[in-house]
Length: 482
Ligand code: NOJ
Image 1 (cartoon, helix red, strand yellow):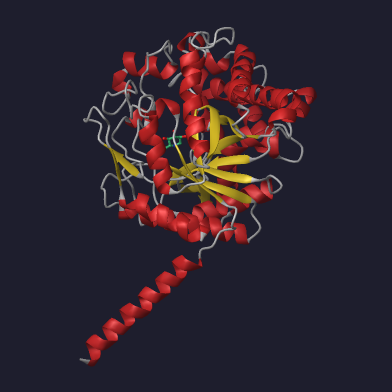
Image 2: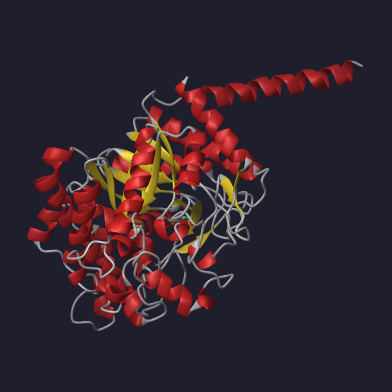
């Protein structure tokens, strides 16, 4: 009797403590909780109303073997036809903001800005107006990996022509939507789309990624200046960029492993962020030195990393009102014992990566639940980039079950990490859960489920059903706002 009383008493204490831990997570009152998606992953209607073929339409149609389940985004969540349904579930969550992206091919089918597709404009207008009607702030990503296939055939992000073409496309977005959209993200995760230049070739591995970084930075800066010089005075919005970064934890506290983890961060995040956010701009010193050293050993006449002129450094520096970060997971990085002089990005980075097997896994091999990693990353951003305004533009976990306890635990832990980072002075203003609903997860097709809402992809209506995490997120937000 006494024993079972103790057991119940202990349970009660544990329960109360947990409640307190959860209850004690507290965000500033004006903190923005949101939810995110992207065009190719949800819209479908791939060739309707004059929309043209994108690089992803082309890839999935001609090389289905590169996608786990040989699927594509032809219909996806059918969001092009289901705005009302999407708005309904966004509202159900009680979020303050919805992050989505525009499909370049839907508003400028030729890729150029001389011919605008009114049907595409109508679609995004309806979505934006629907959000604003319910006080939900649209956060719009101009480029989330899909561009006209016609431009891909000219080399895509390795062709400097993309700088002007992207800026022209962005101008159309400001022109048509900027009266109501006040939160713009030029690019989503350049590290990812720049790693996809032409897989498996020397060009991709050793050159393409760096060339893409250079072109993307110039396109971003040009767009930022256009917005500030031509639109800001009337539209008064904010414009930033979204990066991705894993947290790279040194495997041991040896000087070599600490240096290796720093190298991994500089090659993944710094390559794209340093020129905009660091005190002096330009590519990170570590990256410049390492690629120059390797290039010399490989008998190249100059570094494979393009050199930014002082004029370019000036033009790119400081061109963001906020630092968007997509963060999912962490790894353990060590200094490798191997040596290689192969022309390859991975050889340039020169690290070994692993994980702690005790970190809970998800449906995606690359994603484990390591909440403290986000805390470390936010402090790193604060210290490295002069405490910028940060939005966590994506954070999420893949799990299929409706009773998705793994996802709920993940959100609990990561949100607590964000709150701790804010308490330590990190300037984080918002957090977007990825994703509103299950969608086309790129090379994983429909086999990895990131949705707060489950989507039935065999139902022509693509019915959306809330998972436990949707209820949990809604309650969490209500709690924070009350
Ligand atoms: C980041 C990308 O922006 C998004 O498109 C993708 O679905 C998520 N990561 C999950 O992998």
